[in-house]
Image (cartoon, rainbow, N blue to C red; front, side):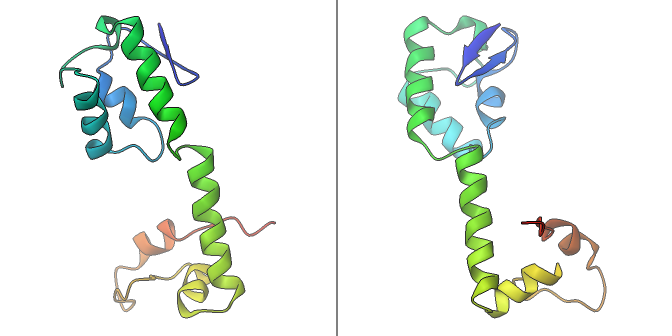
Length: 119
């Protein structure tokens, strides 16, 4: 098990998929991080050196990912619906926000626009 940014990963897991498991780190960001620290795209977590693990952890800690990013997105949506904008009301009612049709095929938008309203 390799400890990377407060998460344990199996040594047989790919570095790319391990990085992408963090909220806010997608394929482009993970590829850029791997290129910065000279890690092969098919490298496993167990084959990383100690310095590479420390460097990856340092760069991940400087980024806005996981709970900080979730909080920022939630605050942005809350700001929109508190000021009563069109987009905020669409988020509030769970409707499509970016101009999609609502006559049919709305189930996905309702599922994706759901936010917690408790408090």
